Image (cartoon, rainbow, N blue to C red; front, side):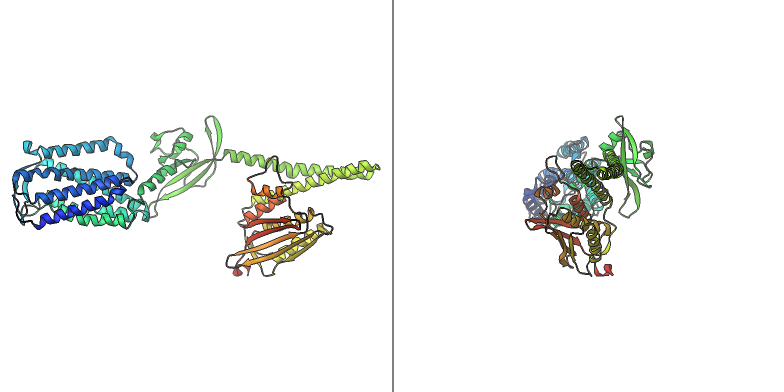
Length: 565
């Protein structure tokens, strides 16, 4: 029954051994996405190659026919496992539990049963005979229609799996491109000899050389595994991210094609627009009037659950890999609360800046008149206290106005600012306002900062003014100097020193918290103005307070020499 071992059998057996070795090595990755199905695919190849290799040594027709069962079992389920691997690996694992996938498994089971029972009905093949070639027990038989149906299903599953992997190559860029391309191309090499055998190409009894080229196929698989981290970087994560990103965005997202027909929308958009998935393919203006994907992003008002809401509209074009426009993404963000907050702040700001300031100026005038006409020292003292408090409230309103100006600026209108000249101007203004104070500036004339000049002036003015105003020394002193300037780091460090009592700890603690509390709050707005101004300038702010006074440390970005010129 057995003859000399032919090279065809040796080659097929060796291919099977290599496949078994790869399966053993991959076993530790069976719990990764696609791992179990990839291992099952290679295991089927091993079963095919080993069964075929042994079958080539068997010349007894009955026993030789029995070896067709494991061979076709492997053939029928290689396609199933490869397709399952491609689905799970590319993020389509939900289809594995679909009725379609169940039908595919059932069909391949039927194909296998047909092969097992073929001697009874001969609908898969007929005229089965052993016709040795190159000393191997090759066989010849007439392929019946069922065999072609069986093989077509096998080829289609391999093709669909390869297409899914190829789609990853084109859709997700270089991140998964190499390993997906290697796995998608690997079935081509065994597929070609299988088709030659299926259609009985050639004049001699056809040889099924498919198992012999499995090693070439495995080279691509091993490259994807060992060189490209096959199970470490899985496209399923990217696909899941793409699919869930618009759902977890928290805003309504609508995607339209080039003809402005809706092709995708998330759950929030369905809720907002009062539609469901049946709206796909419907023109955008039929469900969302007033939004032009190619126009300006103007806000819109919509009635949701009986309430009027304001939405900011953001549109962005969609392009294919060649850069051609294929549609637009429309994001609707609920800004009702923000708009109402802006309106409230605008009203309060107007009241604080205009009404309160004007009324306080009137009160201040009457207090001055009352003080001039009063001869009672106790009354005059009370009027003086009231005048001081009124003056403080007026200054508070002015400070609020300056904070409003700072917060409306994004700090983007920057230029190369000569710091020494700017600080000289600040010092001159403060000397006029505080004649008893002493202000010294020690900054190089050639130092320039990349900053918004108004913001920068406001920061230094408020720091120096705060130091003079809250200083209980007989001769308040403020010094502004450059500690260091690192051209390579692009930062300059300044110190603002005073000889006052220092800033209270609770004032500094407030600046590091998210906001002021009812029990612990800052007594003024000056430090907040400094903090916000420094943030807009792209700098850092620190305080060093002790008994000798307070040192404020500022780190601000410098301007390049050519910018200064």
